[in-house]
Image (cartoon, rainbow, N blue to C red; front, side, top):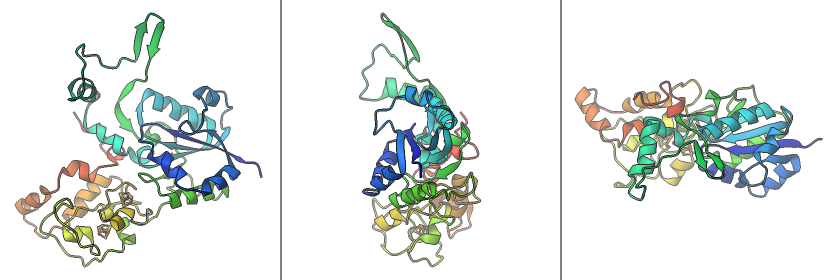
Length: 318
Ligand code: SF4
Ligand code: SF4
């Protein structure tokens, strides 16, 4: 059987997805036996020009991780879309915007001002901010254009499959690789390697359908190790998050933060969280509910940590 041609690329991301691919450990040798890596900038010395020189649809599968934050990310997304038979949005950032998507709570100008002029460690007396084109004696230097908002991959190009997670678990990655190698991928547009259920469906912590009278923080109170976080008053995004990570956070002693994105049928994870999590509050009095919700530090970011660019509003309206 001919070996597959496989590519992996990171756009606006932390690199954790690349590390997660290596976390399949010795199975990386099985991947190498089944597929030739034709582009993987973090691990191999291919150039963008190598990809540009490929015929269209020459790459069998590209695992694209990272959101689209700047013009370089967008160029590579369009290039790899054209060169790939199958384009996979791999990891939370490509899937739903991820942590870089929190920047959609600020304007482009606010971000540049904060980073280049205001941070305590910045010394910038000439108040220089990045310019996509700069003339120098030798010619012109260009850098990517910083876009106004972060977008998940499918807001820029057509995506064939989604692999959620920040990062996806090694077991999930291996399942995805096996599905690709065996040609047993599900219907186009599907989420692969994760579950069709929620985190709560897969969580082994004890639940008694108890209502809560307040929220606590793990930094100040020790949770019971066997009982549902939410029923103890600790925030957990389990009711509104797709399963498939083997509840790795809950087993490590913290509530789910939502990185697998919304479960099937949920359009807006943050909005769903608002409805699901406030429904476990015991009081029906508006003032009481407000007082209790105010105990959640930063409701907006707690409920939308990973999915703002994929939400119905996609960004703060400034
Ligand atoms: S809310 Fe969190 S801790 Fe409770 S059952 Fe759901 S996933 Fe588990
Ligand atoms: S428990 Fe939640 S935050 Fe943790 S890895 Fe799983 S989906 Fe992501």
